[in-house]
Length: 260
Image (tube, rainbow, N blue to C red; front, side, top):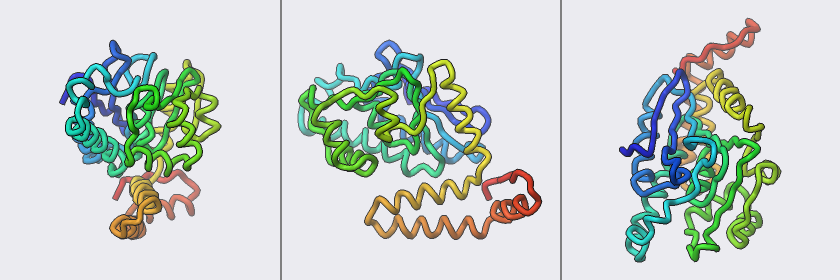
């Protein structure tokens, strides 16, 4: 664990805060290494319906990986591989989590920060946010796992533009390209995020978990992912929540789901 990450649960929403505002929340190795355990803890918490990842302050979600560490942690091929494994474990933990994970982006979302945000299920942004993958300006080779994730999200052409040009996308451009799903003025951003998590809390947790597994199966050739998705769907069909959903529809009332 590290003081540069703050994990909180308020009601049905868990929040992971990237807490290094003096460095614009740049992601250090110890932050990458701590993320999987925090996400797993949120996933085990039955009261949590959604997870929000955000940066401390308003200047940045995350300005990228902490470049000041690169001499120590990414100077050689072996050390770079160790670092990359840590980042991969962090981003993979978001997809493996059964709860929906939302990136709440204010300000700068560059490099490693963008990789973290793209690994979330949904991205919401303030209108002063900016997005960039600057690897081509730093001489960094963007690895196959990260590139595959971008291609799965955006297709090869937009991924090529991002990686070839290292251009900065403003919030409106990010929305039009599907990099984010919604934007709001900075002063109304918390309202956007809270409204989104409230919608998720009102829906059936088992259905959302099944959807995450089905999406993962759709993006993978691994038959184990399809089996997991099929099992999750079967769990929904045999659940108390499915009974509650049907009854609420017939009784013309809002359902109250329990996640079982």
